[in-house]
Image 1: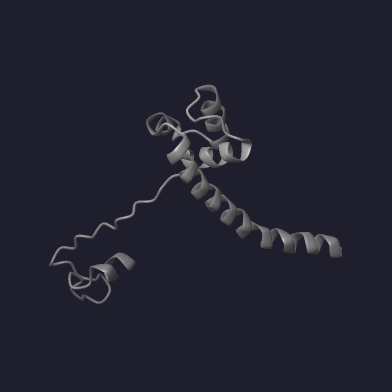
Image 2: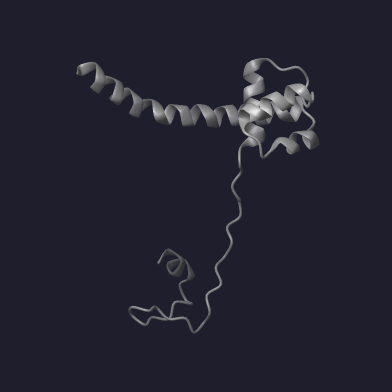
Length: 115
């Protein structure tokens, strides 16, 4: 019983570690890909899974020969989806009103988006 509780507790602790390790591998892959890979050919594997990307990197020789750790990092970097860095502003019409209180919301577009 104690071992089951201990394993469950460890699984909750380990989850953030895997996310941090993955993000560190993606950063490492970015550095490696800048130096050792062809950028145009690397973009062709963007929509694959990391395992398929690894196979294609080796078979098509997109990068110079890499060890398995470097290969995994480059594959994770190539297949990771980057978020949009610029936020788009919301256009709120001047005559828009709150349906609950009737306040004109054009003055506070961020509040409008929040609601």
